[in-house]
Length: 209
Image 1 (cartoon, rainbow, N blue to C red):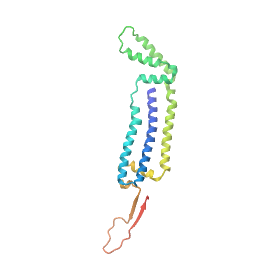
Image 2 (image 1 turned 180 degrees about the vertical axis):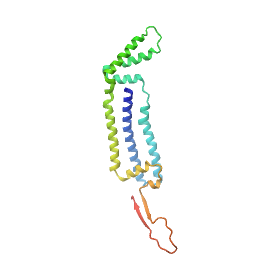
Image 3 (image 1 turned 30 degrees about the vertical axis):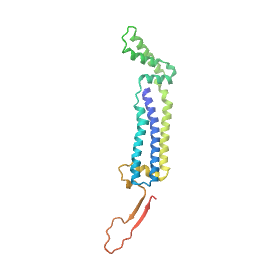
C-alpha cells in the first residue's frame, strides 16, 4: 500500500512537470515557427525538435522515477520516517525475516521472528496502513497537475493565434507542411482552361498575414 501510494504521488508529480515541459516546448517551437514564417523547412525541423524533446522529458520526468526499483527496506524506512510511532518495528521485522531465510545457526528463533512480524503488522494497522503519510502530498501533486493543465488550456485558447497554429502544425505530423502553414495566398479561380484569345480575371487574397 505504501509503495503504491508513493508511486502514485511520483506519477502525479512527474505528470505535472511533464505537462509543463511539454507546454514550454510547444510554445518555444511555435514562436520559432512564427519567426521563420512557417516555412516547410522550419515546420519539419521544429517537429523533430519537439518530438525528441517530448520523448526526453517523458523518460526523465515520468518513466524513470516510476520505473525505479524500491526495496522493502526502503519502503519500511520511508514509512517509519513519516510515522515516528512505528519506531524501527517494520524495518527490524523485514531485516529479521530476510536474514532468517539464510540463517542456519542454533540461536535463530523462528518463533521470535514470527512474533516480531506480527507486532510490526499490528502497529501498521494502528496507523491505518500508513495512509496518512502520502495524503497531503498526493493532494498537492494532484493540485499542481490540475493547475498546469488548466493553465495550458487557457494559454492556448486565449494566447496569440500563432500559438494555436504552431501547436496544430507540430502535433499533426501526417499533414503536409503546406497545409500546416497559416500563411497562404488564395488564387481564384484556380486551375482553369482558358480559350485562345479569351480573357480571364484572376484574384489573389492573402490569408493569415
